View 1 (cartoon, helix red, strand yellow):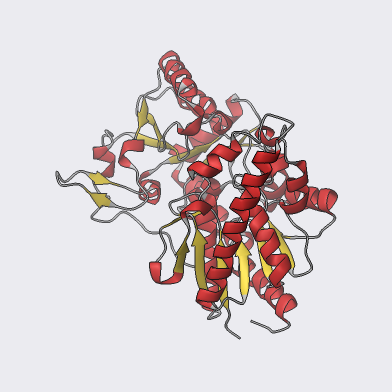
View 2 (cartoon, one colour; view 1 turned 90 degrees about the horizontal axis):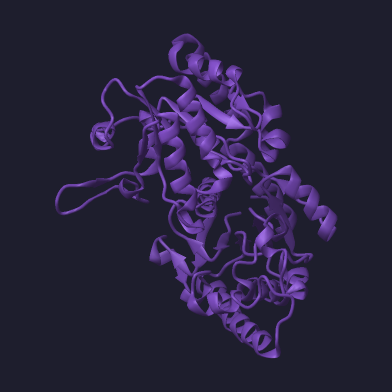
Length: 420
C-alpha cells in the first residue's frame, strides 16, 4: 500500500549526514512505491515535491538570536519564552500546510527531535504530532546529551518535552547502540538501531572523463601516493594522527590530501596541523576550494569536484577520529574499496569493530605495528586486494539498503496496520 511520506528537517541540502541518509531512506521507500516529500528551511530537492520554509533553517537569524540566549546560561526570561512560543506556533502552521499540500500519511522527522539546534521547530513538531496523531518515524542522528555545548542551558523543560518527544503514534530509530541505550534510560522508550548505510548492491563509480585529471589538478604526480583525509578540519577528527602516520612512512611520494575546510571551530587547529606537518616533513594538500556539493565548471573552465570524485584516486584513507556518531567516511572508503586507517573511537568499538572488518586500527596512538599494517595495505598488492574485498563483503552484509528496508517496513506496518 504506497504512502505519501514527509521528511522534515532544518536542512535537506548538501552532503551533511542527515541530508545524505534521508536521501537513502527515500530511495529505499521508492522501491516499495512510497512517495517522499520534503520540508525544511534550506532545500535542494525538487521544488515540486518540497515545502521550503526559511524560518525552519537552523541558521535563520531569528533562531540564532534565540539560541544565543538559551545555551551557556541557566535562566531565561519571559520575553524569550514568548518568542519561542510564537516562533513554534508559526512553524506548526507550516507543518499543517505541508501535510495538507501533499496529503501526507506518515512523517519522518530527521534529527529535529534529537539535537536542539532549532528549539521552536522541535516544539512545533511535537505539538503537531500530538494534535494530529499522524504516524511518525523519528530518525535520531545526534542527541543533545552527546554534545557538551548543550549541557548548560535554560530550557530543561523544552528538552524534556520535545527532544525527543514520546507519543503513541511515534517510533524511534537511532544510528548506534550507545544512543539506543541512552534513549531507553533517559526517556523510557525503545528504538530500533539503523546505522548509516550504502547501496552495496550497486558497484561504486570509477574515474571518468570529468575526474581523470583530478590528481594533476590538486598537484600530484603520477607516482605520488594519495592519502586522503575526507573530513572537515576539526579537532575530533584527529588529523594530527594522520600526519604522524604519513611522517612515519618516510616516503616523499606519500602526500596527505585534506578534502574539507576548517569549519566553524576557527583556524587555530589548522595552523597547528600545518606546523606539525613541517616538523614531520609531510606535504599537506588542502583542496577544500576544489570540492563542492555538485560537479561544476566556472566560466574559465576551472572544475569543482565532489567528495565522491576523490575516492577512486585515493590509495589510502585516514580516519583517526576521537569521536563519531557513526562514521560515514569509513563506509565510503569501504564502498570504494580503499584501505582505511581508523582510530578506535567509542562507537567504532561498540558497533562496528565486532562486525569483523580488516582495517589498519590504531588505539589512540600511532605505533610501529600500525605503520607496518599501513605499509602492507599500500605496497603489498595481494594483501591490499584481500583486505578491500573482505571489507566490501562484510559491509554489504551489515550496512546495505536491505537493513533499512526491513526496519521501515516493520515500522510502517505497526503504525498503520497495513504492510508496505
